[in-house]
Each structure stands twice: as C-alpha cells, then as structure tokens.
Length: 157
Ligand code: ACO
Image (cartoon, rainbow, N blue to C red; front, side, top):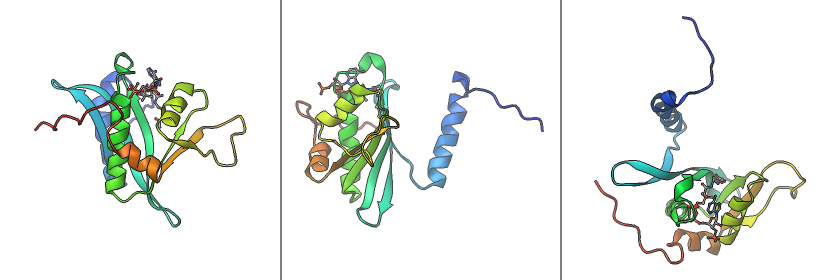
C-alpha cells in the first residue's frame, strides 16, 4: 500500500474524531464535555483526564477548553469549567491542573479570576507554558455553579 503524509483537511474531521475517541478509549480516559444548542451546533468543548500522583492521589488535568469566538464572554467557558471541576470532585480528585501558553493573557486572567493559582514549576523563566492549579476550596467552589449562572438545564435524551 502506498502512503502519503499530508496536512489534515476539514473533510478528515469525522474520521479523525473516531481516532481521537479510539485513542482515549485505549488509554482508558475518555472524558470530554461539550456544550451545544438543540439542533446539534457545538458552542464549545473541554477535554480532560485523571492523572495519579503518589502525593496527591487522583488529579484532574484539563487539556483543552475552547468556546467558539461568537459565543465567548457569555458564561459558556465558566459553565464548562464548573462541569469539569464537578466531574473531578466526584471522581475524588483533590486538584485540577492545566497549562496556558504564555502569550494567552486573556485565558490566564480567566483561570486566575476563577481561583486558579499559578504554579509554574521552577518559576516562569520567559519561555514555555504557565501552569495553573485549583485545589481545596478553590476546586470545590469551581465545582459549584459560576456566580450569576443558574442551574444548567437538564440534559436531553
Ligand atoms: N472573549 C471574551 N472573553 C474572554 C476571552 C475572549 N476571547 N478570553 C478570556 N475571556 C475572559 C473575559 O475577560 C471574562 O473574564 P471575567 O468573567 O473575569 O470578566 C471571561 O473570560 C468570560 O467568561 P466566560 O464567558 O465564562 O468565558 P468564555 O465562554 O469566553 O470562555 C475561554 C473562556 C475558554 C478562555 C474562551 O474565551 C476561549 O475559547 N478562548 C480561546 C481559546 C483559549 O484560550 N482556551 C483556553 C486555553 S488553556 C487550555 O485549554 C487548558
């Protein structure tokens, strides 16, 4: 069989999604949340998994949080983050960690305003991502509804 390596195209997405899910199942950590409107349009998503530390026990690692540009600033990211924290607390996690690229100041503000502590290993030296951690009360507060946001509507069938 002849192979060709090429950049991904939008038309690859359905097959790609299948492979992402297959990898997640292989690694036994298929945890994703998505938020959308009836009719199937996705507004945003979060991708996270549980890690294990001898010191901390199970921890949640948030790999991606994304809200589509027209829907930003309306509380959707906060709601996704709360849902992810809630899943972590239910799974017995004592902390939630994530990394933000240094230049992404708005995301750093977003996590900082919600109780995330910056704990970049060795201090930030002008390169690499910034690490944020929610633990203890910051994590349990995050797992509650974001301020000013009512309970999410029950999930449909
Ligand atoms: N547009 C609007 N608000 C933004 C933006 C943005 N691009 N980026 C950050 N914010 C801040 C606002 O200042 C506001 O802060 P405040 O509540 O303290 O005043 C807050 O985010 C808005 O809260 P929400 O409406 O709940 O958040 P939103 O739905 O906009 O989601 C998110 C926040 C996920 C950061 C979103 O803006 C986004 O997808 N940005 C681009 C991708 C990104 O940076 N993702 C995070 C990378 S780190 C990671 O993935 C682990």
